[in-house]
Amino acid sequence: METTANNIKLTIDLKVLQHTILHYKTIDSTNRFLLDAEDLRNGTVVLADDQTAGRGRFNRVWQSLPEKALLFSILLNKFYNLRTPAVYTFLAAVGVYRGLRKILPASINLSLKWPNDVLLNGKKVCGILVQGKIAGGCYEKLVIGIGLNVNQPPQFFVDKLERATSLAAETGVEWNRDEVLNHALTAIDHLLIVLQESGERPIIVMWQDACESIGQEIAIDDGKKVYRGIFDGLSEDGGLRLQTKSGPMQFYAGDVTVLKEQNNAVSD
Ligand code: BTN
Image 1 (cartoon, rainbow, N blue to C red):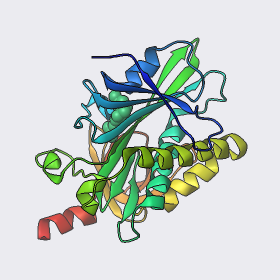
Image 2 (cartoon, rainbow, N blue to C red):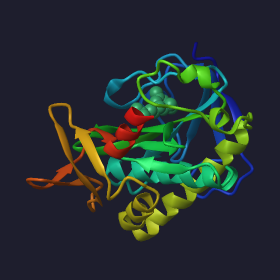
Image 3 (cartoon, rainbow, N blue to C red):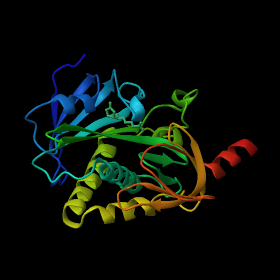
Image 4 (cartoon, rainbow, N blue to C red):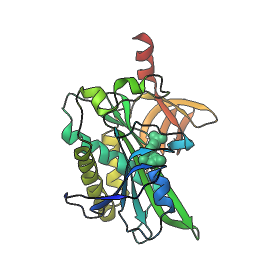
């Protein structure tokens, strides 16, 4: 399954991310690989054509089709000024969003959904999973895992629990995965520099600017209860601020549904 990596040399301009990426045809999970690996350089990128145990949030399975998606993870290690994991989720989402905006026609709607999704025409095209390894009470490394649906056909998404899609399903054409990856990595690399130089605030602001559900009525399921209210943007530390009938609340985990969208779906 996990064969030897075939190195790919990127020719794009990168300052934090490594130019040589580790490419596997099949691996269990690119996140698991980087969490377990030792002595890899900061900014190492691992890319797979297929995963046998791809993981999503809440330990859900992340499925794809061989050679149809971009499945990759980025290592940030202890020699880097590591910040809270949440900001890297937002950073990666904004990076993918900006990378896609550069190549997609303006007619395609792109947006972000809290906390870790990129939406294409309202459907999930990309999910992000940031995981960390703790040693001595602090993070020894963080791994940013990104699953971006590129060329899966529309039928792949029928019967999936989440409303999901791919670039090809929305645009009707096949995309060059290397080109999409280069755009996403260029944008993420730039944002890592912004974070280093200016801190979390600009990342939070960029994320909010790209999120269309702020100001709308949403429901958030925190695993115990569903709360309804108006999505009031992000707190400084990336929490979701909700204005409910009984007052303001803040969430750090949960599944969000935009209620306007849900009503539309019912009346369609
Ligand atoms: C989610 O939306 O739940 C997050 C999905 C993250 C999937 C990616 S694919 C590459 C990396 N390796 C994994 O096992 N998961 C992430």
